[in-house]
Image (cartoon, rainbow, N blue to C red; front, side):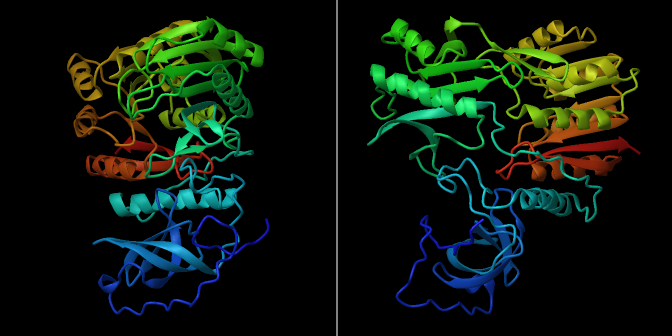
Amino acid sequence: MKERKYSGNRSDKKQQPQSKPSIAKREQADEVRSGDRIVVTIKRLGINGEGVGYYRRKAVFVEGGIPGEVIKAEVTRVEHKYIAAAIREIEKRSPHRVDAPCPVFGICGGCQIQHLSYEGQLAGKEEIIREAFARYAGLQEVRLKPMLGMDHPWGYRNKAQLQLGMAQEGMIAGLYAADSHKLIDITGCPIQHPKVNEVVDKTRNVLQRLGIPVYKEKGNQGLVRTIVVRVGFQSNQLQVTLVTASDKLPRREELVKELRLAMPVLTSIAMNVNPKNTSLVFGNRTEILWGADGIQESLGDLEFTLSPRAFFQLNPLQTVKLYESVRAAAGLTSRETVVDAYCGTGTIGLWLAPYAKEVRGIESIPEAVEDAKANAARNGRNNAAFYSGYAEELLPRWVKSGFAPDVIVADPPRTGLDPRFLEAVLKTKPKRFVYVSCNPSTLAKDCKALLDGGYALEWVQPVDMFPQTAHVETVVLMSKK
């Protein structure tokens, strides 16, 4: 990659200031003020992909900083526990710094670390996990297995969910810039599957050509809010869903005809109606305008039908590695009973079912439970059953009735495990507890509670589900002492 000087704006051109600002010489970090220039050595990546260093022992977060770099930064905000700063000059450059290939990197907010080589990304994410366990669980050493990365860390996302808006050049589909309501066109996004990008582009062109109005929150006018496109990695089937503010879709038949002509490979065209002013993408009603009710997809020997609103992992290639890590942690010999908490549409439980005596999944969203039951029936997993409810309520009830699971698997949202569920696990005392997490901080905090409750942390397996972003998925095995 061609080396270039890092400047404080989006331009690649080196800025020539009128006078060179002096470096602040503060005795205490509390004396630092916005606008001061400080020198920071970046030690690690933060959970949002920013560089983290220290000034007078106070944490400094520098967007775009890379571990190992020495940076002259301008203070942009001073808080009680940290300082935020922006890069003005890189005195010592990391060998892992590269030019991000995406023209809107750093603007759209979808990726945070495209400027870091893939080798550097994996190392940085491993350090995020170590830091979380040291900070929140008091563990300075953990048995961290090497990160399971990708051979080709691009074009991996099987689904795009893009807002529509109008700009000078016409209709655009994209994401909102970080901390703003400005829509950024992300046509040709390099982490989306190429077919997804193609279908988004052609769908937008058809909508614009037919004059189908874009929804505007201000004034509650227009119609189409979002384009949702999903591709089956194994089946190559393609699904387009238009999220609209009303079920009154003008030129419906002509729209379907034009979409099919532009993309003969389409499998399904749907409309989801969401009339509410909400941050949620989907409404409760979905209508198939043409084609199949869903597209086909597979993971290993499992087959799924994905309706427009059905949840499915965004990176199928890495999902197989993740689930195999869960299976290794569960240590099943066909004699064990397993509880799959926060089970969603049941994919983890169904993956484990052939190796277990019985699997019971728990999920609070009724629609997901129905999908899980259908998936179990379709794949002949007769020893897997799924229940609607909360794990912290159902698990104690089952234990009281005589069902004592040997293994509990939990895959909670970013907020982590419900404290009542943790309490229920400690009372149930399964031999193994397998924790699947997308947030190292809440993972480490929950593991601390399990450690205090008599469990030992055997190993940690990170999986890079979302290359070019700061997100990292982790599988942890805890065993009863």
